[in-house]
Every structure is written in C-alpha cells, then in structure tokens.
Length: 88
Image (cartoon, helix red, strand yellow):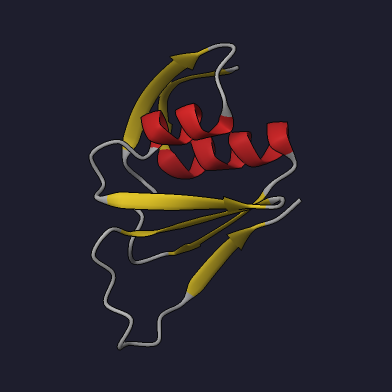
C-alpha cells in the first residue's frame, strides 16, 4: 500500500523502493521530483502504483528483475544526461 499526502514524487518513488526492494533509475531532468502528489492506494501492483505516481509527466517505465527504469515517452537519446538511482 502507498498512502502519502502532499508528498513529492521523489518521496513516493523512495517509498515504492523501500516497500518493494527494487532499484529505481531515472534521468533527473525527466522526472518532476518536487511535484506534490497525494496518493492513497492499497492492494495494488507496483505497476499500478507507478501509474499513479507518474501520472501527467509524459513518462513510461520498465520493470526488469528488481529494477524500475523510468524514462520520457519521447526520449532524446542524443545527449548525455545525469542518471539518478534510488537503491536499496
């Protein structure tokens, strides 16, 4: 379950990481980490939680093993960018 009120997207992603044990990878320029959200979900999958947390950010994600990779839908791969990781 994930219950956060007026929390940042970063806090929500950290909570998902803590509850699941997954590593979370994303480009800091792509994700609005300080955007405030309110989330209250129970008995949902990781994918459903990510759908709620990342709503309205033009992002997609991929689950591979114990890793969540978040990226822009229309990513521009021509530039080298800083990657941020939330690890266990």
